[in-house]
Image (cartoon, rainbow, N blue to C red):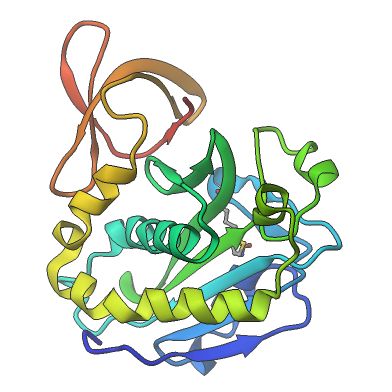
Length: 247
Ligand code: BTN
């Protein structure tokens, strides 16, 4: 790994979850395999949430990565790398202006358009592979989006057109693997400025959900490890390691 810029695409007509499928068959996939489907019926989100779908064709994909040097592999920042790549794609190919909600949700005008779920595959407590899953609302209808428990949008609702998901998966994979080896070599610093440029919430008061509780902070900055630095109600500076920025 490190010089990987080729990838293999595996298209499934439908599947319960591309992440589950990738994990179940992990030994049959090489480093750099992109498994995707237009129809996923039991998608999993972060914190055991569901990832919704309807009959329309959307992007449900999982990238299988098999790092060679696990000591230096920037696993904690992988989802942030993918979020930057996705922002590039939305801007360049669809003229859509996305924002990142820490750590890796992609929003357009406050509505979620994509979510990312990275899962580690370990053997004897050693990282052997990563399954980097991404759901992108491409052709999801307004009716389905209204059923989601947070504001959500699709590319089709934003542009008024329907899209071929195979073409988008190809493009997204090109974008991802073009800079992947640079990211693996340099880690978060490789994307830090671009990532920060997309974080619409910095310099604002935010609510963070950590496990079952919510707390209010001032969002100060993103540090060199990609962690969110905040100021709490007692004026203490602290780092958010897990959790979701709600607004
Ligand atoms: C989130 O925002 O909660 C993350 C959602 C990740 C959903 C994608 S869809 C493809 C892949 N397979 C899954 O089951 N989940 C991820």
